[in-house]
Image (cartoon, rainbow, N blue to C red; front, side):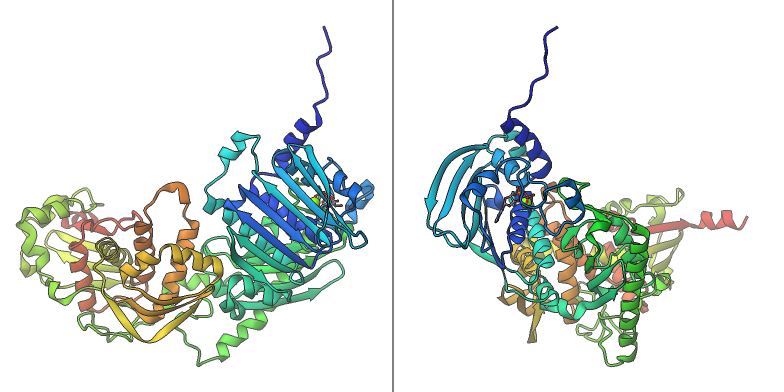
Length: 613
Ligand code: ADP
Ligand code: MG
Protein backbone atom coordinates (compact mmCIF):
# COMPACT_ATOMS: atom_id res chain seq x y z
CA UNK A 1 0.00 0.00 0.00
CA UNK A 2 1.24 3.49 -0.82
CA UNK A 3 1.64 6.23 1.77
CA UNK A 4 -1.50 8.25 2.05
CA UNK A 5 -0.79 10.83 4.73
CA UNK A 6 0.08 14.33 3.50
CA UNK A 7 0.76 17.57 5.28
CA UNK A 8 -2.00 20.06 4.66
CA UNK A 9 -0.90 23.19 2.85
CA UNK A 10 -0.67 26.22 5.16
CA UNK A 11 -3.68 28.02 3.76
CA UNK A 12 -5.86 24.96 4.38
CA UNK A 13 -4.48 24.52 7.89
CA UNK A 14 -5.16 28.19 8.51
CA UNK A 15 -8.72 27.89 7.26
CA UNK A 16 -9.31 24.99 9.61
CA UNK A 17 -7.78 26.89 12.51
CA UNK A 18 -9.92 29.87 11.59
CA UNK A 19 -13.01 27.83 12.28
CA UNK A 20 -12.07 27.76 15.95
CA UNK A 21 -11.12 31.39 16.35
CA UNK A 22 -13.46 33.14 13.95
CA UNK A 23 -17.08 32.14 14.21
CA UNK A 24 -18.62 35.41 13.14
CA UNK A 25 -17.73 39.06 12.54
CA UNK A 26 -17.80 39.68 16.29
CA UNK A 27 -14.87 37.27 16.73
CA UNK A 28 -12.81 39.41 14.37
CA UNK A 29 -13.80 42.49 16.33
CA UNK A 30 -12.68 40.85 19.57
CA UNK A 31 -9.30 39.73 18.21
CA UNK A 32 -8.50 43.06 16.56
CA UNK A 33 -9.54 45.13 19.59
CA UNK A 34 -7.45 42.92 21.84
CA UNK A 35 -4.42 43.28 19.58
CA UNK A 36 -4.82 47.04 19.73
CA UNK A 37 -4.94 46.92 23.53
CA UNK A 38 -1.87 44.67 23.61
CA UNK A 39 -0.08 47.20 21.39
CA UNK A 40 -0.55 49.77 24.14
CA UNK A 41 -3.03 51.98 22.26
CA UNK A 42 -4.92 54.58 24.28
CA UNK A 43 -7.37 55.48 21.52
CA UNK A 44 -9.07 52.83 19.41
CA UNK A 45 -11.67 53.22 16.67
CA UNK A 46 -13.84 50.37 15.45
CA UNK A 47 -15.56 50.73 12.10
CA UNK A 48 -18.26 48.28 11.03
CA UNK A 49 -20.13 47.99 7.77
CA UNK A 50 -23.01 45.67 7.12
CA UNK A 51 -22.77 44.05 10.56
CA UNK A 52 -19.09 43.36 9.95
CA UNK A 53 -19.86 41.12 6.98
CA UNK A 54 -18.47 43.69 4.56
CA UNK A 55 -15.99 45.47 6.80
CA UNK A 56 -14.47 45.31 10.25
CA UNK A 57 -11.77 47.90 10.70
CA UNK A 58 -9.77 48.70 13.82
CA UNK A 59 -7.59 51.78 14.00
CA UNK A 60 -5.21 52.10 16.93
CA UNK A 61 -2.47 54.46 18.03
CA UNK A 62 -0.38 51.71 19.60
CA UNK A 63 3.22 50.79 19.06
CA UNK A 64 2.82 49.62 15.44
CA UNK A 65 4.92 47.04 13.63
CA UNK A 66 8.19 47.04 11.74
CA UNK A 67 8.25 45.89 8.10
CA UNK A 68 9.35 42.39 9.06
CA UNK A 69 6.78 42.08 11.84
CA UNK A 70 4.05 43.34 9.52
CA UNK A 71 4.84 40.48 7.22
CA UNK A 72 5.26 37.90 9.98
CA UNK A 73 2.14 38.70 11.94
CA UNK A 74 -0.02 36.77 9.45
CA UNK A 75 1.94 33.55 9.93
CA UNK A 76 0.43 30.90 12.15
CA UNK A 77 1.94 30.73 15.65
CA UNK A 78 3.60 34.09 15.04
CA UNK A 79 3.40 36.08 18.24
CA UNK A 80 5.46 38.64 20.06
CA UNK A 81 3.69 37.89 23.30
CA UNK A 82 5.17 34.65 24.57
CA UNK A 83 8.49 32.96 23.98
CA UNK A 84 8.11 29.70 25.89
CA UNK A 85 5.40 27.55 27.40
CA UNK A 86 6.25 28.90 30.84
CA UNK A 87 5.12 32.32 29.69
CA UNK A 88 1.61 30.94 29.40
CA UNK A 89 1.39 31.25 33.16
CA UNK A 90 2.70 34.76 33.25
CA UNK A 91 0.45 36.47 30.77
CA UNK A 92 -0.10 40.18 30.78
CA UNK A 93 -1.46 40.40 27.26
CA UNK A 94 -4.78 39.45 25.71
CA UNK A 95 -3.23 37.46 22.89
CA UNK A 96 -0.58 34.74 23.03
CA UNK A 97 -1.59 32.07 20.56
CA UNK A 98 -0.38 33.89 17.48
CA UNK A 99 -3.19 32.57 15.36
CA UNK A 100 -5.80 35.29 15.14
CA UNK A 101 -4.32 37.25 12.24
CA UNK A 102 -3.32 34.06 10.41
CA UNK A 103 -6.84 32.75 10.78
CA UNK A 104 -8.49 35.97 9.72
CA UNK A 105 -6.18 36.34 6.70
CA UNK A 106 -7.17 32.84 5.57
CA UNK A 107 -10.86 33.68 5.27
CA UNK A 108 -11.06 37.36 4.33
CA UNK A 109 -9.49 40.19 2.38
CA UNK A 110 -7.19 41.91 4.83
CA UNK A 111 -5.41 45.26 4.58
CA UNK A 112 -2.83 46.22 7.14
CA UNK A 113 -1.22 49.64 7.55
CA UNK A 114 1.22 50.12 10.34
CA UNK A 115 4.07 52.32 11.52
CA UNK A 116 6.23 52.34 14.62
CA UNK A 117 7.20 55.52 16.43
CA UNK A 118 10.80 55.27 15.25
CA UNK A 119 10.08 54.65 11.56
CA UNK A 120 9.46 57.54 9.19
CA UNK A 121 7.25 55.62 6.85
CA UNK A 122 5.00 52.69 7.40
CA UNK A 123 4.08 49.43 5.71
CA UNK A 124 0.89 48.49 3.88
CA UNK A 125 0.17 44.86 3.16
CA UNK A 126 -2.81 43.37 1.37
CA UNK A 127 -3.47 39.69 1.88
CA UNK A 128 -6.28 37.51 0.52
CA UNK A 129 -6.89 33.92 1.51
CA UNK A 130 -3.45 33.74 3.16
CA UNK A 131 -1.72 35.03 -0.05
CA UNK A 132 0.14 38.33 0.12
CA UNK A 133 -1.20 40.37 -2.79
CA UNK A 134 0.79 43.52 -2.30
CA UNK A 135 3.26 45.17 0.02
CA UNK A 136 4.04 48.88 -0.13
CA UNK A 137 5.70 51.67 1.73
CA UNK A 138 3.08 54.18 2.90
CA UNK A 139 2.72 57.36 4.85
CA UNK A 140 0.56 56.52 7.84
CA UNK A 141 0.24 57.70 11.43
CA UNK A 142 1.95 55.79 14.23
CA UNK A 143 -0.06 52.74 15.11
CA UNK A 144 -1.93 50.11 13.18
CA UNK A 145 -5.04 49.99 11.03
CA UNK A 146 -6.37 46.60 10.05
CA UNK A 147 -9.31 46.29 7.67
CA UNK A 148 -10.99 42.93 7.32
CA UNK A 149 -13.27 42.81 4.30
CA UNK A 150 -15.69 40.22 2.95
CA UNK A 151 -15.37 37.77 5.79
CA UNK A 152 -15.80 34.12 4.75
CA UNK A 153 -15.70 35.13 1.07
CA UNK A 154 -14.05 31.78 0.33
CA UNK A 155 -16.21 29.68 2.67
CA UNK A 156 -19.78 30.27 1.45
CA UNK A 157 -21.18 27.76 3.93
CA UNK A 158 -19.89 29.84 6.83
CA UNK A 159 -21.08 33.04 5.24
CA UNK A 160 -24.57 31.66 4.79
CA UNK A 161 -24.53 30.50 8.36
CA UNK A 162 -24.30 34.08 9.61
CA UNK A 163 -27.38 35.53 11.23
CA UNK A 164 -29.27 38.67 10.32
CA UNK A 165 -27.45 41.99 10.51
CA UNK A 166 -29.32 42.84 13.69
CA UNK A 167 -28.11 39.72 15.43
CA UNK A 168 -24.53 39.98 14.17
CA UNK A 169 -24.37 43.66 15.12
CA UNK A 170 -25.58 42.80 18.58
CA UNK A 171 -22.75 40.27 18.95
CA UNK A 172 -20.28 42.91 17.82
CA UNK A 173 -21.61 45.45 20.29
CA UNK A 174 -21.35 42.81 23.03
CA UNK A 175 -17.67 42.26 22.25
CA UNK A 176 -17.10 45.99 22.03
CA UNK A 177 -18.70 46.47 25.46
CA UNK A 178 -16.52 43.77 26.97
CA UNK A 179 -13.27 45.26 25.76
CA UNK A 180 -14.37 48.83 26.48
CA UNK A 181 -15.41 47.92 30.03
CA UNK A 182 -12.19 46.04 30.70
CA UNK A 183 -10.18 49.10 29.66
CA UNK A 184 -11.92 52.30 30.74
CA UNK A 185 -8.65 54.22 30.54
CA UNK A 186 -8.60 53.70 26.76
CA UNK A 187 -10.76 55.93 24.55
CA UNK A 188 -13.04 54.05 22.15
CA UNK A 189 -15.10 55.07 19.17
CA UNK A 190 -17.43 52.78 17.30
CA UNK A 191 -18.92 53.63 13.91
CA UNK A 192 -21.62 51.47 12.38
CA UNK A 193 -22.39 52.08 8.70
CA UNK A 194 -20.92 55.55 9.05
CA UNK A 195 -22.95 56.48 12.13
CA UNK A 196 -21.36 57.16 15.49
CA UNK A 197 -22.61 54.45 17.87
CA UNK A 198 -20.24 54.95 20.78
CA UNK A 199 -17.80 57.69 21.58
CA UNK A 200 -16.22 56.82 24.90
CA UNK A 201 -13.63 59.13 26.38
CA UNK A 202 -10.91 57.70 28.62
CA UNK A 203 -12.39 57.50 32.13
CA UNK A 204 -12.84 55.34 35.18
CA UNK A 205 -15.01 52.22 35.33
CA UNK A 206 -18.08 53.94 36.78
CA UNK A 207 -18.00 56.59 34.09
CA UNK A 208 -17.46 53.98 31.39
CA UNK A 209 -20.44 51.94 32.55
CA UNK A 210 -22.60 55.03 32.57
CA UNK A 211 -21.37 56.10 29.13
CA UNK A 212 -22.29 52.73 27.70
CA UNK A 213 -25.48 51.90 29.55
CA UNK A 214 -26.95 55.35 30.12
CA UNK A 215 -26.91 57.94 32.88
CA UNK A 216 -29.58 56.31 34.97
CA UNK A 217 -27.26 53.36 35.53
CA UNK A 218 -25.23 55.52 37.87
CA UNK A 219 -27.67 55.35 40.75
CA UNK A 220 -28.06 51.59 40.32
CA UNK A 221 -24.41 50.83 41.03
CA UNK A 222 -23.24 49.46 44.34
CA UNK A 223 -19.45 49.57 44.64
CA UNK A 224 -17.60 46.37 45.47
CA UNK A 225 -14.06 46.49 46.78
CA UNK A 226 -11.94 43.87 48.52
CA UNK A 227 -8.37 42.80 48.56
CA UNK A 228 -6.97 39.59 49.93
CA UNK A 229 -3.79 37.70 49.27
CA UNK A 230 -5.14 35.62 46.46
CA UNK A 231 -7.81 37.89 45.03
CA UNK A 232 -8.47 41.57 44.48
CA UNK A 233 -12.05 42.43 43.57
CA UNK A 234 -13.31 45.80 42.42
CA UNK A 235 -16.21 47.07 40.39
CA UNK A 236 -19.94 47.24 40.90
CA UNK A 237 -23.04 45.17 41.29
CA UNK A 238 -26.46 46.51 40.34
CA UNK A 239 -28.93 47.03 43.15
CA UNK A 240 -31.18 43.99 43.55
CA UNK A 241 -34.30 45.73 42.27
CA UNK A 242 -32.67 46.11 38.88
CA UNK A 243 -32.09 42.42 38.45
CA UNK A 244 -33.48 41.21 35.16
CA UNK A 245 -35.02 38.03 33.88
CA UNK A 246 -32.68 38.00 30.93
CA UNK A 247 -28.98 37.53 31.24
CA UNK A 248 -27.54 40.86 30.28
CA UNK A 249 -25.39 43.20 32.27
CA UNK A 250 -23.15 40.53 33.74
CA UNK A 251 -19.45 41.02 33.34
CA UNK A 252 -16.50 39.31 34.95
CA UNK A 253 -13.04 40.46 34.03
CA UNK A 254 -10.12 38.44 35.25
CA UNK A 255 -6.88 40.36 34.90
CA UNK A 256 -8.68 42.70 32.47
CA UNK A 257 -9.93 39.90 30.29
CA UNK A 258 -13.66 39.28 29.90
CA UNK A 259 -14.51 35.75 30.93
CA UNK A 260 -17.63 33.66 31.19
CA UNK A 261 -18.09 31.61 34.31
CA UNK A 262 -21.32 30.10 35.50
CA UNK A 263 -19.49 29.10 38.68
CA UNK A 264 -18.61 32.69 39.57
CA UNK A 265 -22.05 33.85 38.43
CA UNK A 266 -23.45 31.46 40.96
CA UNK A 267 -21.22 32.94 43.64
CA UNK A 268 -22.56 36.43 42.97
CA UNK A 269 -26.12 35.27 42.66
CA UNK A 270 -25.94 33.47 45.96
CA UNK A 271 -24.67 36.66 47.58
CA UNK A 272 -27.97 38.24 46.52
CA UNK A 273 -29.91 35.48 48.24
CA UNK A 274 -33.26 36.65 49.48
CA UNK A 275 -32.99 39.94 47.64
CA UNK A 276 -33.99 38.86 44.18
CA UNK A 277 -37.34 38.19 42.65
CA UNK A 278 -37.65 34.63 41.48
CA UNK A 279 -36.14 33.97 38.09
CA UNK A 280 -34.11 37.16 37.94
CA UNK A 281 -30.36 37.54 37.67
CA UNK A 282 -28.29 40.28 39.27
CA UNK A 283 -26.25 42.62 37.09
CA UNK A 284 -22.57 43.15 37.81
CA UNK A 285 -19.32 44.55 36.50
CA UNK A 286 -16.61 42.85 38.52
CA UNK A 287 -12.88 43.08 38.01
CA UNK A 288 -10.98 40.22 39.54
CA UNK A 289 -7.25 40.40 39.79
CA UNK A 290 -5.30 37.27 40.58
CA UNK A 291 -1.73 36.13 40.30
CA UNK A 292 -1.10 35.23 36.65
CA UNK A 293 0.45 31.97 37.85
CA UNK A 294 -2.77 30.91 39.52
CA UNK A 295 -4.88 30.73 36.36
CA UNK A 296 -4.82 28.90 33.06
CA UNK A 297 -6.23 30.85 30.13
CA UNK A 298 -5.19 28.38 27.49
CA UNK A 299 -8.17 26.08 27.83
CA UNK A 300 -10.46 27.59 25.22
CA UNK A 301 -9.69 28.89 21.69
CA UNK A 302 -11.48 32.17 22.21
CA UNK A 303 -9.94 32.58 25.65
CA UNK A 304 -13.26 33.34 27.32
CA UNK A 305 -12.97 30.58 29.87
CA UNK A 306 -10.21 30.18 32.38
CA UNK A 307 -9.23 27.74 35.07
CA UNK A 308 -8.43 28.98 38.55
CA UNK A 309 -6.07 27.00 40.73
CA UNK A 310 -8.20 27.66 43.75
CA UNK A 311 -11.72 27.95 42.44
CA UNK A 312 -13.42 27.29 45.76
CA UNK A 313 -11.56 29.99 47.61
CA UNK A 314 -12.32 32.49 44.85
CA UNK A 315 -15.99 31.53 44.97
CA UNK A 316 -16.20 32.00 48.71
CA UNK A 317 -14.36 35.29 48.66
CA UNK A 318 -16.39 36.71 45.83
CA UNK A 319 -19.61 35.74 47.51
CA UNK A 320 -18.58 37.25 50.84
CA UNK A 321 -17.38 40.46 49.20
CA UNK A 322 -20.57 41.03 47.26
CA UNK A 323 -22.67 40.19 50.30
CA UNK A 324 -20.76 42.72 52.34
CA UNK A 325 -21.29 45.45 49.75
CA UNK A 326 -24.98 44.70 49.56
CA UNK A 327 -25.21 44.70 53.32
CA UNK A 328 -23.80 48.18 53.50
CA UNK A 329 -26.17 49.32 50.82
CA UNK A 330 -29.25 47.74 52.29
CA UNK A 331 -29.27 50.21 55.18
CA UNK A 332 -30.03 53.07 52.87
CA UNK A 333 -33.58 52.31 51.68
CA UNK A 334 -34.72 51.50 55.21
CA UNK A 335 -33.76 54.94 56.49
CA UNK A 336 -34.90 56.77 53.42
CA UNK A 337 -38.55 57.27 54.27
CA UNK A 338 -39.18 59.90 51.66
CA UNK A 339 -38.33 57.68 48.83
CA UNK A 340 -41.04 57.08 46.28
CA UNK A 341 -41.91 53.49 46.87
CA UNK A 342 -43.87 53.33 43.64
CA UNK A 343 -41.35 51.43 41.69
CA UNK A 344 -38.18 51.85 43.54
CA UNK A 345 -39.09 49.29 46.14
CA UNK A 346 -35.75 48.23 47.55
CA UNK A 347 -36.22 44.52 47.23
CA UNK A 348 -38.42 41.82 48.44
CA UNK A 349 -37.63 38.66 50.21
CA UNK A 350 -38.34 35.81 47.89
CA UNK A 351 -40.44 33.95 50.41
CA UNK A 352 -42.77 36.85 50.78
CA UNK A 353 -43.34 37.29 47.10
CA UNK A 354 -46.99 36.34 47.30
CA UNK A 355 -47.65 39.65 48.99
CA UNK A 356 -46.09 41.51 46.07
CA UNK A 357 -45.40 44.69 48.00
CA UNK A 358 -44.37 46.66 44.95
CA UNK A 359 -47.88 47.78 44.19
CA UNK A 360 -49.60 50.71 45.75
CA UNK A 361 -53.18 49.85 46.17
CA UNK A 362 -55.80 52.49 46.35
CA UNK A 363 -58.68 50.92 48.16
CA UNK A 364 -60.87 53.82 47.20
CA UNK A 365 -60.22 52.97 43.60
CA UNK A 366 -63.27 53.09 41.41
CA UNK A 367 -62.78 52.01 37.85
CA UNK A 368 -65.96 53.76 36.82
CA UNK A 369 -64.45 57.10 37.57
CA UNK A 370 -62.53 58.18 34.55
CA UNK A 371 -59.70 59.77 36.50
CA UNK A 372 -58.12 57.67 39.20
CA UNK A 373 -54.57 58.88 39.23
CA UNK A 374 -53.78 57.72 42.73
CA UNK A 375 -53.95 54.12 41.84
CA UNK A 376 -51.53 52.04 39.93
CA UNK A 377 -54.36 49.93 38.69
CA UNK A 378 -56.20 51.24 35.72
CA UNK A 379 -58.84 49.91 33.49
CA UNK A 380 -58.69 51.38 30.05
CA UNK A 381 -62.26 50.86 29.14
CA UNK A 382 -64.73 53.34 27.92
CA UNK A 383 -67.74 53.90 30.13
CA UNK A 384 -70.43 53.86 27.54
CA UNK A 385 -69.67 50.28 26.65
CA UNK A 386 -69.97 49.23 30.23
CA UNK A 387 -72.21 46.23 30.46
CA UNK A 388 -73.72 45.40 33.80
CA UNK A 389 -72.91 42.15 35.45
CA UNK A 390 -76.25 40.85 34.24
CA UNK A 391 -75.04 41.05 30.70
CA UNK A 392 -73.17 37.87 31.37
CA UNK A 393 -76.50 36.15 31.63
CA UNK A 394 -78.71 38.28 29.44
CA UNK A 395 -76.70 37.50 26.37
CA UNK A 396 -76.56 33.85 27.13
CA UNK A 397 -79.17 32.75 24.73
CA UNK A 398 -77.77 34.59 21.81
CA UNK A 399 -75.67 32.46 19.51
CA UNK A 400 -72.78 34.83 19.71
CA UNK A 401 -72.35 34.47 23.35
CA UNK A 402 -72.64 30.75 23.23
CA UNK A 403 -69.85 30.70 20.72
CA UNK A 404 -67.71 32.69 23.06
CA UNK A 405 -68.49 30.64 26.04
CA UNK A 406 -67.82 27.43 24.18
CA UNK A 407 -64.21 28.53 24.03
CA UNK A 408 -63.98 28.76 27.78
CA UNK A 409 -61.66 26.12 29.00
CA UNK A 410 -63.53 23.99 31.43
CA UNK A 411 -61.29 22.25 33.86
CA UNK A 412 -64.07 20.29 35.38
CA UNK A 413 -65.41 17.57 33.18
CA UNK A 414 -68.90 18.21 34.36
CA UNK A 415 -68.93 21.85 33.52
CA UNK A 416 -69.67 21.91 29.86
CA UNK A 417 -71.02 24.50 27.47
CA UNK A 418 -74.43 23.97 28.96
CA UNK A 419 -73.24 25.71 32.07
CA UNK A 420 -75.11 28.90 31.49
CA UNK A 421 -78.09 27.60 29.65
CA UNK A 422 -80.68 28.30 32.24
CA UNK A 423 -78.87 31.10 33.99
CA UNK A 424 -80.98 34.12 34.82
CA UNK A 425 -80.02 37.49 36.18
CA UNK A 426 -81.35 36.59 39.60
CA UNK A 427 -78.04 34.91 40.39
CA UNK A 428 -76.98 38.38 41.39
CA UNK A 429 -73.93 40.47 41.00
CA UNK A 430 -71.80 38.87 43.62
CA UNK A 431 -68.09 38.39 43.22
CA UNK A 432 -65.47 37.60 45.79
CA UNK A 433 -61.77 37.85 45.78
CA UNK A 434 -59.60 35.01 46.95
CA UNK A 435 -56.05 35.70 48.15
CA UNK A 436 -56.05 38.92 46.13
CA UNK A 437 -55.46 36.69 43.16
CA UNK A 438 -58.67 35.06 42.01
CA UNK A 439 -62.11 36.44 41.38
CA UNK A 440 -64.80 34.00 42.38
CA UNK A 441 -68.25 34.28 40.85
CA UNK A 442 -71.11 32.04 41.88
CA UNK A 443 -73.01 30.88 38.86
CA UNK A 444 -76.18 28.88 38.84
CA UNK A 445 -74.47 25.62 38.10
CA UNK A 446 -71.63 26.17 40.53
CA UNK A 447 -68.71 28.52 40.68
CA UNK A 448 -66.36 30.25 38.31
CA UNK A 449 -62.80 31.12 39.28
CA UNK A 450 -61.00 33.80 37.28
CA UNK A 451 -57.28 34.54 37.47
CA UNK A 452 -57.35 38.32 37.88
CA UNK A 453 -53.95 39.15 36.45
CA UNK A 454 -54.35 36.96 33.39
CA UNK A 455 -57.88 38.20 32.84
CA UNK A 456 -56.72 41.79 32.83
CA UNK A 457 -53.79 40.87 30.63
CA UNK A 458 -56.17 39.40 28.06
CA UNK A 459 -58.41 42.48 28.13
CA UNK A 460 -55.48 44.86 27.74
CA UNK A 461 -53.87 42.73 25.06
CA UNK A 462 -56.91 42.77 22.82
CA UNK A 463 -57.43 46.46 23.42
CA UNK A 464 -53.80 47.31 22.66
CA UNK A 465 -53.62 45.12 19.61
CA UNK A 466 -56.72 46.78 18.26
CA UNK A 467 -55.26 50.20 18.90
CA UNK A 468 -51.99 49.37 17.22
CA UNK A 469 -53.55 47.88 14.13
CA UNK A 470 -56.57 50.17 13.80
CA UNK A 471 -54.82 53.29 15.08
CA UNK A 472 -57.64 54.05 17.43
CA UNK A 473 -55.77 54.93 20.56
CA UNK A 474 -56.33 58.10 22.47
CA UNK A 475 -53.45 59.84 24.11
CA UNK A 476 -53.38 61.77 27.35
CA UNK A 477 -51.28 64.89 27.27
CA UNK A 478 -48.79 65.16 30.14
CA UNK A 479 -48.62 68.43 32.01
CA UNK A 480 -44.88 68.13 32.27
CA UNK A 481 -43.05 66.10 29.67
CA UNK A 482 -41.52 62.95 31.06
CA UNK A 483 -37.75 62.62 30.68
CA UNK A 484 -36.45 59.08 30.58
CA UNK A 485 -32.88 57.86 30.32
CA UNK A 486 -31.97 54.80 28.32
CA UNK A 487 -28.78 53.25 27.04
CA UNK A 488 -28.01 53.67 23.37
CA UNK A 489 -28.87 50.09 22.45
CA UNK A 490 -32.17 50.51 24.31
CA UNK A 491 -32.99 53.66 22.37
CA UNK A 492 -32.26 51.79 19.16
CA UNK A 493 -34.80 49.16 20.09
CA UNK A 494 -37.39 51.77 20.98
CA UNK A 495 -36.81 53.62 17.72
CA UNK A 496 -37.66 50.48 15.81
CA UNK A 497 -41.09 50.29 17.39
CA UNK A 498 -41.68 54.02 17.63
CA UNK A 499 -44.52 53.91 15.16
CA UNK A 500 -46.40 51.16 16.97
CA UNK A 501 -45.85 52.87 20.31
CA UNK A 502 -47.32 56.03 18.86
CA UNK A 503 -50.35 54.03 17.82
CA UNK A 504 -50.92 52.91 21.38
CA UNK A 505 -51.04 56.55 22.43
CA UNK A 506 -47.43 57.50 23.15
CA UNK A 507 -46.28 60.90 21.94
CA UNK A 508 -42.52 61.34 21.84
CA UNK A 509 -41.47 64.95 21.73
CA UNK A 510 -37.79 64.22 21.48
CA UNK A 511 -35.64 61.13 21.12
CA UNK A 512 -31.96 61.57 21.72
CA UNK A 513 -29.06 59.13 21.82
CA UNK A 514 -29.63 58.04 25.36
CA UNK A 515 -32.77 59.71 26.54
CA UNK A 516 -36.25 60.56 25.42
CA UNK A 517 -38.91 63.06 26.22
CA UNK A 518 -42.49 61.89 26.26
CA UNK A 519 -45.39 64.31 26.38
CA UNK A 520 -48.27 62.00 25.65
CA UNK A 521 -49.06 58.55 27.00
CA UNK A 522 -51.85 56.03 26.40
CA UNK A 523 -54.98 56.98 28.37
CA UNK A 524 -55.04 53.70 30.17
CA UNK A 525 -51.57 54.07 31.63
CA UNK A 526 -50.30 55.99 34.62
CA UNK A 527 -47.28 58.16 34.21
CA UNK A 528 -45.48 56.29 36.97
CA UNK A 529 -45.82 53.03 35.02
CA UNK A 530 -44.26 54.29 31.83
CA UNK A 531 -40.63 53.57 32.57
CA UNK A 532 -41.36 50.06 33.78
CA UNK A 533 -43.50 49.34 30.74
CA UNK A 534 -40.83 50.52 28.33
CA UNK A 535 -38.10 48.63 30.17
CA UNK A 536 -40.13 45.44 30.05
CA UNK A 537 -40.75 46.01 26.38
CA UNK A 538 -37.06 46.44 25.66
CA UNK A 539 -36.24 43.24 27.54
CA UNK A 540 -38.98 41.32 25.74
CA UNK A 541 -37.90 42.52 22.32
CA UNK A 542 -34.27 41.86 23.07
CA UNK A 543 -35.03 38.33 24.24
CA UNK A 544 -37.23 37.60 21.28
CA UNK A 545 -35.54 35.50 18.64
CA UNK A 546 -35.59 37.88 15.66
CA UNK A 547 -36.01 35.10 13.13
CA UNK A 548 -39.01 33.61 14.86
CA UNK A 549 -41.31 35.74 12.77
CA UNK A 550 -43.58 36.90 15.57
CA UNK A 551 -45.29 40.06 14.67
CA UNK A 552 -43.81 43.06 16.36
CA UNK A 553 -47.32 44.34 17.06
CA UNK A 554 -48.26 41.20 18.86
CA UNK A 555 -45.10 41.26 20.93
CA UNK A 556 -45.65 44.88 21.83
CA UNK A 557 -49.25 44.30 22.85
CA UNK A 558 -48.30 41.25 24.90
CA UNK A 559 -45.45 42.98 26.64
CA UNK A 560 -47.43 46.10 27.50
CA UNK A 561 -50.42 44.08 28.62
CA UNK A 562 -48.17 42.09 30.93
CA UNK A 563 -46.67 45.23 32.50
CA UNK A 564 -49.96 47.07 32.80
CA UNK A 565 -52.20 44.28 34.04
CA UNK A 566 -53.29 44.38 37.64
CA UNK A 567 -50.92 42.24 39.64
CA UNK A 568 -51.58 39.26 41.79
CA UNK A 569 -51.73 40.56 45.33
CA UNK A 570 -53.80 43.57 44.47
CA UNK A 571 -57.07 43.95 46.29
CA UNK A 572 -59.93 44.77 43.92
CA UNK A 573 -63.19 46.19 45.16
CA UNK A 574 -66.47 44.76 43.96
CA UNK A 575 -66.94 47.29 41.19
CA UNK A 576 -63.45 46.70 39.85
CA UNK A 577 -64.02 42.96 39.94
CA UNK A 578 -67.31 43.13 38.09
CA UNK A 579 -65.92 45.49 35.55
CA UNK A 580 -63.01 43.21 34.86
CA UNK A 581 -65.26 40.17 34.51
CA UNK A 582 -67.50 42.02 32.09
CA UNK A 583 -64.59 43.19 30.04
CA UNK A 584 -63.12 39.73 29.99
CA UNK A 585 -66.26 38.25 28.52
CA UNK A 586 -66.33 40.95 25.89
CA UNK A 587 -62.97 39.65 24.67
CA UNK A 588 -62.54 37.48 21.63
CA UNK A 589 -60.80 34.80 23.61
CA UNK A 590 -61.67 35.14 27.27
CA UNK A 591 -60.37 31.76 28.32
CA UNK A 592 -56.68 31.95 27.44
CA UNK A 593 -54.16 34.59 28.44
CA UNK A 594 -51.93 36.12 25.74
CA UNK A 595 -49.18 33.85 27.05
CA UNK A 596 -51.43 30.84 26.52
CA UNK A 597 -52.35 30.18 30.13
CA UNK A 598 -55.78 29.36 31.44
CA UNK A 599 -57.77 32.31 32.77
CA UNK A 600 -60.97 30.63 33.87
CA UNK A 601 -61.84 27.53 35.80
CA UNK A 602 -65.32 26.38 36.67
CA UNK A 603 -66.58 24.02 39.32
CA UNK A 604 -70.05 22.54 38.97
CA UNK A 605 -72.37 21.88 41.88
CA UNK A 606 -71.85 18.18 41.28
CA UNK A 607 -68.15 18.67 42.01
CA UNK A 608 -69.13 19.97 45.43
CA UNK A 609 -71.58 17.16 45.92
CA UNK A 610 -68.81 14.68 45.36
CA UNK A 611 -66.60 16.36 47.94
CA UNK A 612 -69.35 16.31 50.54
CA UNK A 613 -70.16 12.70 50.00
P1 ADP B 1 -1.35 37.14 19.27
O1 ADP B 1 -2.16 38.34 19.60
O2 ADP B 1 -1.87 35.92 19.93
O3 ADP B 1 0.09 37.32 19.46
P2 ADP B 1 -2.18 37.68 16.59
O4 ADP B 1 -2.29 36.83 15.39
O5 ADP B 1 -3.40 38.34 17.07
O6 ADP B 1 -1.55 36.81 17.72
O7 ADP B 1 -1.09 38.77 16.30
C1 ADP B 1 0.22 38.38 15.93
C2 ADP B 1 1.22 39.43 16.29
O8 ADP B 1 1.02 40.58 15.47
C3 ADP B 1 1.09 39.96 17.70
O9 ADP B 1 1.81 39.15 18.61
C4 ADP B 1 1.67 41.34 17.59
O10 ADP B 1 3.07 41.31 17.72
C5 ADP B 1 1.35 41.75 16.16
N1 ADP B 1 0.19 42.63 16.14
C6 ADP B 1 -1.07 42.28 15.85
N2 ADP B 1 -1.91 43.34 15.91
C7 ADP B 1 -1.16 44.40 16.24
C8 ADP B 1 -1.42 45.79 16.45
N3 ADP B 1 -2.68 46.28 16.35
N4 ADP B 1 -0.39 46.58 16.76
C9 ADP B 1 0.86 46.09 16.88
N5 ADP B 1 1.17 44.80 16.70
C10 ADP B 1 0.20 43.96 16.38
MG1 MG C 1 -4.10 38.66 19.07
